[in-house]
Length: 109
Image (tube, rainbow, N blue to C red; front, side):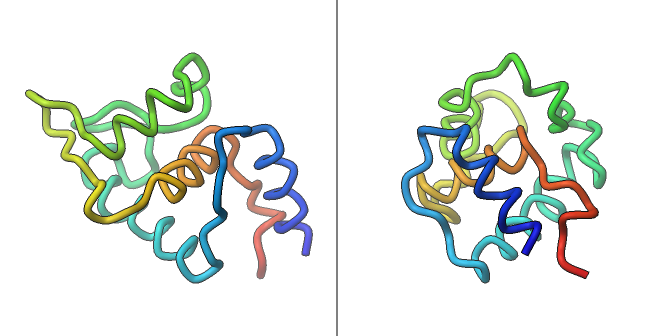
């Protein structure tokens, strides 16, 4: 319950959010983030081949830039496009999670 409230508060700060993915899809997106993105950005998202994906590293980057990077990739780098794996609203949700993660005590046990 607390996680849901924290998520709603975080999402309220993101006017670019359109459609919220289902709970099942949110879980799949977080798995993709930690497994697939983590293979380059570090399993704890602290950086590796790719830059860190933690809030301090992303605070000066706009949501639109991050969403475009996720969906379109970065030509000439190891960052592939993910648009065949997720929709624009799902990328928006994922960016919201990266910039304003839910605290562990707010996650379901």
